[in-house]
Image (cartoon, rainbow, N blue to C red; front, side, top):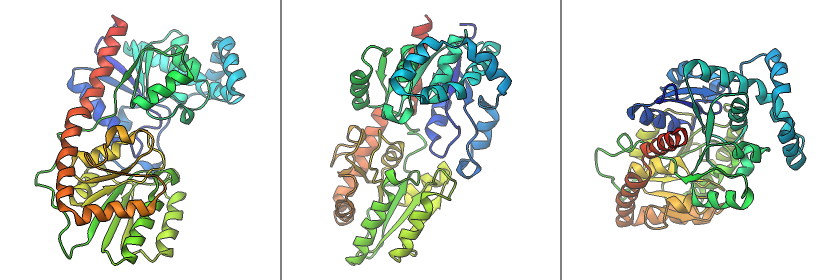
Amino acid sequence: MSQPDTLGYLVPQFPGQTHIFFWREIAALEAMGVTPVLFSTRRPPAGLIAHDWSEAAMARTTYLGEVSLRRAARVLPRLPWGALLREAGRDGIAVLKDVLVCAAAGEALRDHCARQGISHVHVHSCGRAALIAAFARHLGGPGYSLTLHGPLSDYGPGQRYKWRHARFATVITRKLIAEMQAELPKDLPPMILRPMGVDTDYLRRDTPYRPVQPGEALRVFACGRLNVVKGHQDLIEAVRQLRAAGHDVTLEIAGQDDDGGGGFRLVLEQLIKQHRLQDHVRLLGAIDAASVKARLLEAHVFALASWHEPLGVAYMEAIACGVPTIGTAAGGVPELIDDGVEGLLVPPKAPEALAAALLRIAEDPALAQRLSTTGRARIERDYSARLGAEVIVSEMRKALG
C-alpha cells in the first residue's frame, strides 16, 4: 500500500441527519493515526443538514455522483457484463438501472484513489455505494470492504456481485449475520460482528440522573427520522392515552422526514392537532448533536417505538447519557437492550404497552435509577465508536498484508 495509513471512506448522501456515528468513527480513525479520505454519492438536501460539523464534513468530501454522461458512456463497455447480466437474471432489470447510475462514479472513485495513494475503501452501505466500490475495483482501483447496517432487502439488487468481491465485511448484529449466511452462503467474504458505536466520552452525564418528581411532568424525548417505521405515531398515541388518564406527560421528537419537512412530518403534525396535543408534543426537526445531548440530559425517559430497527444508534446515545430507555423488541434491538437491564422493551405497533412502560418508569424511581446506571456501563463496555474503527483498520491491514 503506497500510503498504509490512508483509507477511503464512502458513505451515501453524507452527511445526513443520522450520520453522527460516521463522524465519530472518522475521529476515532484519525486518533489511531489513519487518514480517512471521505467520499459520498451526493450531497444531502438542505433540510437534512443539521449538524454543526456538516459544513466541515462536506468540504472534506468528494461527491462521486457529480460526473458526466460522457464518462459513463466510456466506462460502460468495460464493466463485467457477464456477471452483471446474471445478477439481472436473478434480481430483475433494476440491476441494470443501478449499473447505469453507478458506472461513471466507479471510475471516478478509482481515479481519486490512484491520485491519493488509497489501496482500500470502506463502504458504509450495501446499496449503490457498494456497487460503485465494486466497479472501481474491477476497473483497476482499490479493494473494498462493507458494513451492513440493516436487512439486505433495504439495499437493492445485485447483492451477490457486491459481496463476492469485498475483502471483508462488518455486520452490526448476530441476527443480520445469520440472515446473510442463509441468503448468500456462497458469496460472502469474512464477516466480523461489530455493532455501531458512540462517543462515550462526549455522551455522559456531569450530574446524576434524577427521576421525575411528584407533581412534575414526565419529560419524554425521542430522536429518529420522521418515517412511519420509526413509530413516532405510536409514541404520540401513548402520550395521548396517558394524558387522557390524568398523567402529566410531555414529548419532544427530534428528526426530519426525507423530504425536508414536506413528507411524513405533515402526517404527524395532523395527528398532534387531531388529539389536541399541540401544547404537549413538539416536533423539533433536524437538530445538531449538541442539542440532542442537551435534551437527553433534560429527559426523564427516552423512547423510540420503531416497527423495525437493525440496532439503533439513537438508543445507544440515550443509554450512554444515563437516560432510562424504552425500545421495541424488533430487529436487532434485543441484542442491545436486555429487557429490565439496559432498558425496557415493548412490542412494536403497541401504543398501550408503550404507555404502560412510560408509566412504569415514572412510578418506580428505583427502576429508573437502575436502568440509568446499568445501561451506561453496557455502552461503555461494548459500544464505543473506537471499536468499529479498530476493526476496520485491523482487517484492512490484514487484507493488505
